Length: 231
Image: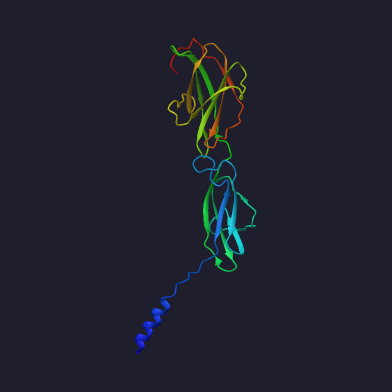
C-alpha cells in the first residue's frame, strides 16, 4: 500500500468521528415581572433580575459597560434594576468550561412622574361661547418624561378643588385640541360650563406609565357671559 493511500485512509477514518465543539458555561437571565409592564417596553415597577449559571463557578454583572467594573453576583439573590434606560451586562466563569462572552440586555424602568419644565406657569380666562354655554381657556407650560406626557385637567364648581372628587379630562400633548398658547406653551378650552359659575381648576402631568405629578396648586375662574369672543 502506498504512503499516499495510507494517508487518505487515515484521514477518512478520523473524519468519520463527530467533532465535539468546546462550549463555555452559560448564564441565563430572568426577571420579575417577566415582561415590561408599562408602555413601550418600559417597566413601571422595579424588576428584580436573577442570573442562573449552567455549572459551578462565579457570575458577574455591571450596569456600566461591557468592560465593567464588575460586581460578583450572589447566586439566588435577585438584583434590583436601576431606574432609567440602562443596559445590564453579565457573564460567568465556569470551573469546567471556562469563561463565556459578555451578554447584555436593555432594561428600562420609569417609576417617576413627569417633570414640569423650568418656570412652568398656569393661567386661565373664562368666556362664553356662542350657543355652547360657558368655556374657560386654560394656558399652561409643558412637562417632560421618558415615556411621553399627557395632561390631566381637574375642575369642579366652587372655590375649592377636591382632586379626588373633581371631574377630569386627560389629553395627550399631541391631541389636536391642544393648541399653541398665547401666553404659555399650550392652551386648551374646557367647554360645557355654566356661565357666571365659579370653577376651581388644576392641572397635572401624567406619563405613559400612569405616573402622575402631585402638584396641588389650583386657581379659580368664571366663564363670564360678558366675554363672548374667540380665545
